[in-house]
Length: 55
Image (tube, rainbow, N blue to C red):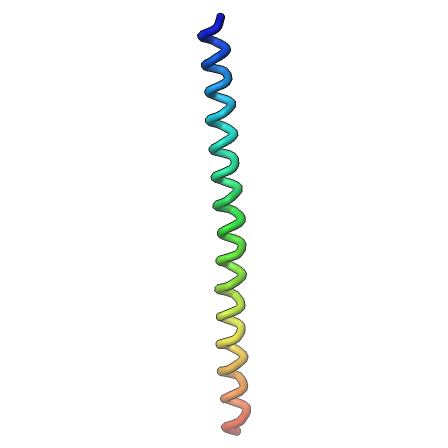
């Protein structure tokens, strides 16, 4: 019985750690995506401004 409880506790701990890691990866992906989007939008705005000043 003690062996089953320790296996269950280990499984819960493993799943908890896996969940926290996946959540951290998701948050990191959102922040990285936001930063890349800002850079792309700034580049696009700069390019449009250059085209408008040439005309």
